[in-house]
Length: 146
Ligand SMILES: [Zn+2]
Ligand SMILES: [Zn+2]
Image (tube, rainbow, N blue to C red; front, side, top):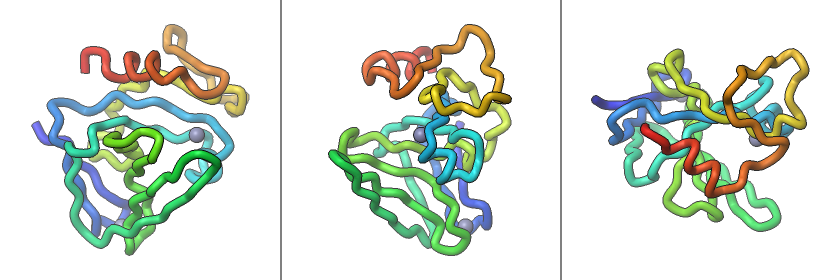
């Protein structure tokens, strides 16, 4: 099985060398609302080495207090595809809505729900966190039987 995805215009495509669609999480923080123009972002954590990308990729770097986030963006339509972060070397954070089969995603956690839109109703039985999730717990949730 190949997991693939791409940008809105089709100029940039990527493939993930993994066996199944990666589990995802939703982030409801203000930055994600701004950056997506939506209620939350949907993201998957994958090994950076499993990712291959082709097309006119551009890079945008954003440095905040203790980290630099490097965003990969389609140079034609400007869709954000994934980013890496100096605090989590080797991990790529894929914008899950860019996956080809994005209607079948398994959302396993909601973070920064302190900023969630009131009308977004979360399902029972899914871990939620007021702000960031503790790193080790978060990784366990996202990698369990994937
Ligand atoms: Zn594009
Ligand atoms: Zn966020």
